[in-house]
Length: 115
Length: 118
Image 1 (cartoon, rainbow over the protein chains, first blue to last red):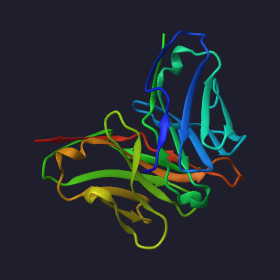
Image 2: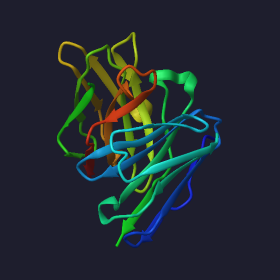
Image 3: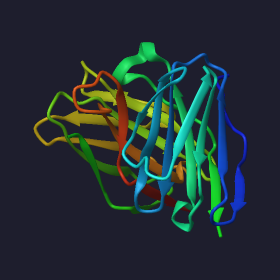
């Protein structure tokens, strides 16, 4: 069974803290994504990684960075958390062979609250 | 640029009634279209997708969607709603990550919350 695992389901952090959100997939997928989900706004792409050490900015990269040192792991980093980054964060992966029509497999999400 | 509009942020139906969730897209190229479902406290999972060929696409759990190019629509239907269908549904279109690039992302609509009443 395919699996995308996000390390933390719920996190509470303080303004200014550095936050790491971890995502691991066991499907040997090349492509990995970080989306942010907010009520009434749907999902918005933060960053995309198409292979190890490769990344591209999505639609809302400001305030975020990412790391992809190993194929199975994609980390989202909030260098200095702010209250407007309180949100649900969803990680997804996709096989490169699927191209533009490949299915995205999602983790269960990490709900971050910044106080 | 590709975009998706879901009409109705909340749809409520009775158990056994027809489910119709509306999605319109904007695309400058032939679109690849998707419907994903999110059950409470879970990630999204693929319901169905349209790439090429037959315009009526069947998915999991009895859902289907029809691609209508003339109407730029990809509405999701199910003949008879079940309590277990209560979830949030997202329509999405495949779009280039960046202009001129070869990587693609999914651009999602804002979602439609489906409530099923007993």
